[in-house]
Image (cartoon, rainbow, N blue to C red; front, side, top):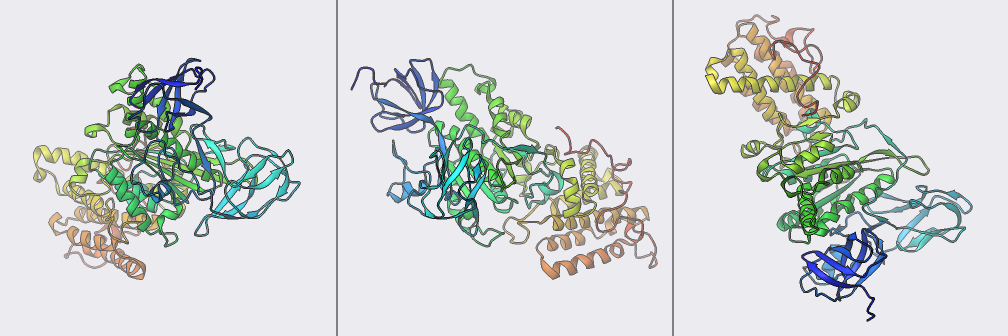
Length: 626
């Protein structure tokens, strides 16, 4: 070999230094060593280059060759992504497994998309038509009737000279421009560069999760970013898997970033067996899995979240609603900390790099609701949900705080609720959402009239419950008046009936918005009727709270006509059940007999007994910055 050929002169874990590399660019991909380990340039001074290697560097020797590729880390975007399982740098694990190996060997190469599979391209343009970036060229069927929209890649424009419909592989041109530029079904895009879009739009519609506590109390607008912090055992992975299954998204990109290998193995085994509520087919048919387990190199872990986001942006540009979920951001931050230490960068709080918050902020800004470039005009949405694993459940640690600076909502998980088997274990005191005002109009129309008022009343009842719990812990429950003790009972009923769900119940595991509104209204109606009964002189121990709790719990597992009939029965019977036996029929001793009182939709004024000051319009828990 020539003396001027680039060679390794230093190895430190996943970091490799090589020289001479005078014209190498920052974040350019290189091949390192005799086996061709894949790496990325993270520092250069014009002669020497520091490379973070995405693979295991054991056995790499000083003096081995280094070959620049001239390109950054890129994703190949085209039909065939849905249903794919890939590692953090885009190698299809199904292809690797088909070769007979169960581990990723050094220098292994695997294609991003299946290069041999043919797709039936249906053209939407004609020769002589002017084209610009983002214009729709045509469609292919990506499975289960999913229309994969083939677009002009960013930065490309011209006039179509030749259009070739029919069967093509992802690399074959389907359109040729007059200047000779070929446009294939797939194109490449650097994962660290946000894909261009037309206009960013404000959120108007919620990302419906099917989880009552989230949709009712802490809704997030489509295109928002959510932080999901929680300690070990609080159910973060289960929540994200539930969101992947039931979340109102056309495409799901799930990033397993630095999680335990057995969890990822269970995920890979379970996802193909999960039934998509939309189609009745496998959930994997509209899902892309990017997995990088805790025993894989940290450099690939750092790249994996960018790969997943780029895939999400690609489907967003087609005009679809996309949900990108990362589990977890903390493992990505730990990879940054390790790489920063090897690069001898100035450490910040708890050893994390000083640019952690900036890097995370730029990443979360790639989420949003946009009007895409090109014609026909279309809107796409990308919603990001990132779980955070704070050590010891300490939400004041740097990664959680950095996430809260850029996230519009936080769904904090409480280990105490998880220990009591209350799932989802959402901490009502810590969690918040800044999207309530954006989604209120949509919720009032689609969830139920009076949604905003019902939400405020429930939050106020739960706030008053926390205050009384503190008093009861000091003085004892018997020191409280009947009305105050009933607030504790009503709040417990709402938590048990409305805010928890059974993930193993085929009906209760997913709660549509109208059903959530109906159940929450009935539970709150128990409080209003009971409060009025106490005001009329009935004793607390005579109120049938236990019977009503059992009836509402049964209602959670009912569906169809049986549920409708049971709801009607409860609405009719509730005032009678709360009325004192001494009261003659027709006496307005319960709130339900007052024609001006709240109906089942939750309209009207809140009872005075919640806080003694009515329902506040401002400062309601969960609506502001924590």
